Structure formats: structure tokens, C-alpha cells
Length: 534
Image (cartoon, rainbow, N blue to C red; front, side):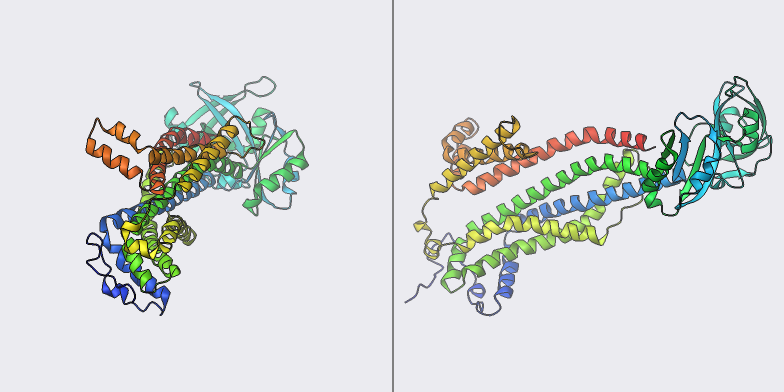
């Protein structure tokens, strides 16, 4: 006669409900696993809520940080484009000396260049000792000048000028006012310009005080007929600006300096943001690892509490793979709920990070947009973290012995051989990490010592805690004898759970320390990158 489980067999253990025992286990096992998992999740509401909260936080950090970073990068690219207008390439002499305007024909001969504009830029001094930049432009052909935000008259006749609005404010001038400018040419003479303001330029960003004059008038006054200092150009495909720049540089030779200001600025800020993005991704990775540990701890405790139920299910014919699928389904259900909610929470969290970027020098950033790729990435990352924490508890549940599960007093202590192996693994990891740190090992893997040292300390600490519960009792005895007793006994029960608990504490502390370190260097790094880019 087979064994018949009784509710009176062990009064302190919960008996599974009859609906679980009488499920058609031979019919649609996957559906059965999902149904049992769905019924078991609400048993520990507080634990389930905390586990889902950990998953939501990890996924929300991943989605929110990447959305905010993408928004900041797009805004910076737009800022650079507005700052430089349609200019893709700038050609000047290496020493900033004027050169013949015949170079314009050479620049224009490049196949991908569509527009060119020659300028003569020269310093001048206003009567009150204000230094300004005189810019001679051909108003009929200068594509960049035609895009300036000018109020008043844009075309220039001899004796007329368009100046920047903040120069007009500094000098107390307005449209129709007259002012004098003195320049110093190469021959030591001081030509004077008597100019009438016919328009005001309102630049996107405050530059040096600038006055725009006719190109021919500027060349004639300075004695530099046929000479220019800059050639501005646009290309048909702005994404090829760096390639065209290199080709034009090869054509003109070393004496000239060819730059692609927009492409180079975006490259510089991308380089600065790469380190920042790496730091943020490490923070997200730490959060997902903690999330995986929390899921592990939750399901590990669930398996321990439901050992009797697992034994009963095994006794009535449930196979080991079915038990594995039940607990795997619980983890997946928690992961699905947490990841979907985490993606939605990440959209709201991205607005917080956008505000943080604004404090770092990115004014008025637009709200970040959730892309399908980022949403899928967040869901997959959350599910991977959940599965990583689910596999071992599910395997452990599937390996429960039927007799020992139904008769708990037959359960023996954990095998000590595993503990010795764990201690050896921790010691080997620590030894390898030390050799790597001091460059004594025959091989070197970057950052291996940084990863192995904390992991080995966590493993060894858990083993010591497990084997030396009396030490924990001695430490906590002055505080509370009851607490000391509970701590010492708890540490000796489950080595795996102790290791995971130590790991969660260590990773959480490192997370806090890492945030402090990143916060100290982020603003300086970004500000430096912006200055270099501009």
C-alpha cells in the first residue's frame, strides 16, 4: 500500500491544497506548472512585493539612464549643429595668416563639396579699447552669413556693418548708430573704419564681439587685396565630413589646417560620454546583480518552506522536470511583472536623469523617448537577471528527496565536502586576484583582480561564518544573547544563503561607494568635454 499523506503527520508543516494534488499532471505539464506557480506567488505577499520592487528598480535604472543619455547626446548634437550652422569644413592657414583666395577654387574642386565661402577675419579696436573681430564677407555668396539671425538690413555697402547684439549693448549702439574701428595690418599701418550699423546679429551662443563688413572693403582697407583667412564649406553628406576633411588636407598640404568642426565636436563629446556611460552601465549592472540575488534568496526560502509540499507532489507522481518548471515559472512570472513595470518606471525615471543632465550644463533638454530597442533590451536584461537567480533554487527543488521531504526528521546535515570545496574555490580566487594585482601571475586579464577580490572575500566570509558560528555568538553576546544565538545558528544552516546574503551586502555597499566616486568626476569630465568640443 502506497504512502498517503496526512495533515496530522507533521503539525508544523503546511499541507498542499487538494487542488494541487489532484491536478492532471500528465496532461499539459507546462500549463500545470504555470497554474501552480500563479497560485503560489501570492502566498508571501510582502516577499513578492519586495522582489518585484528589486526587479523594477534594476530595469528602471537601465531604461531611464539610457533614455536620458540618448536625449542629452541628441540635444548636444543639435546644439553643435545650431552653433556652426550649415558649415561642415573650415580651411585656414596654419599660422592664421592670410592666403590667396585662389585656394577657394581648390576647395570647391573637391567632388563632395557643395558650397564655399571665403572670409577675411582680422582684429580691430573700438575707441573705448574694446577688441572686436572684423569679418569681411561676400554677402551674395556667403551661405553661413545668409543664415545668421539678423534684424535690419543684411546686405552691406561700403561703410556699413552688421554687429552682434551684445557688442551693441556694450557700446550703447543701435541700428543707425556710427562708430569707428582701428585695425593693425601687416605693414604696421593703422587703417580706420568709419562704420554705420545697418543690422544686428543675434547669435545662438555668445561669441567674441564681431562686426561684419563687405569682403572687398575689408581687403582694401587692410591692404590685403585677394587675400582671405578662412574658407567655409558644406558637403553633400555631412556624415562623411571627417573623410572629406582628410582628403582635402592631403590636397592642400601641411601648411593648411582643415577642420570638420561639427563632426570633431561630436566625436569629442562622444569620447567624454563614453566613460560616463560606462560608469552608469556598471551601476545598472550592479543593480541587476542585486536583483538577481534577491530573486535567488526569495525562491531559495520558498523552496525551503515548501519542502513538504514538494515531497507530496513527488509522491503522487510529479516528475523532477515538472517540479523544476513550477519554480522556474514562478521566477519567470515575477520577472515578467517586474520587467514590464520597470520599463514603465524607467520612462518616469528618465525625466529625473534629464533634470540631472540639465544641472551638468545641458539646458532645456527635451523629454527622452522610449524606443522599441531600448524597451526590448530592458525586458531581456531583467529576465536574464531573474533567470540567473531562479535556476539554482528550481534545480534544488527538483532534487528534493521524497522520503526526507515528507519526514523532515530524516533530513541530515549538509555535506561538509561542499563547504571545503567552496572554501578552496574562494581561496584560489583570492590567490589569483593577489597575483594579478601585483603582476606575479604568468598571465594578466584586465580587471580580473577587481572582480575576484570582493567575490573571494564574500565566499570565504560566508564559509567562516558557517563554520565558526561561535564567533558570531561572541560578537553579538554583549548586545543581546538571544540575537547572538539566532545569528550563530542561522549562519550554520545554509552556506549558500549565507554567501548570497554576504554578496548582497558587499555589492550594495560597493554600489553606494561607486555612486559617490562617479558623482565627483562626472561634472568635471562633461564640462571639459563640452569646452573641448566647442
